[in-house]
Length: 98
Image 1 (tube, rainbow, N blue to C red):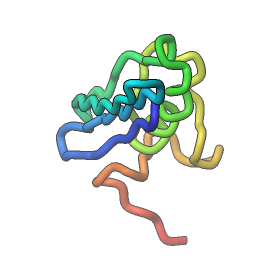
Image 2 (tube, rainbow, N blue to C red):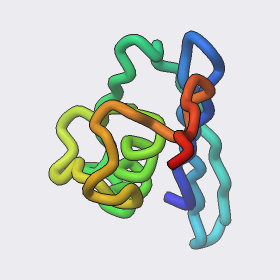
Image 3 (tube, helix red, strand yellow):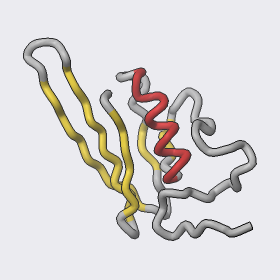
């Protein structure tokens, strides 16, 4: 896995998997899928590609996508005191001023 990213498209979240094969023949594959923002769930791919572990956690942290079956879907980037259910890469997120 090269990276896994997500984009808030309004009613849906697009999740993009970029995969690289470095051995000959070198191959790059991009897989895109969409989940409804109201129920953003996908099956984890960590059992097939363990290197996806941190990328799935990052997408979960920042966009709220739940990777079902993930072995450790805990916070990765956001601080421990970050409010539950608040995802800073969603378009409806508004930063608070203190």
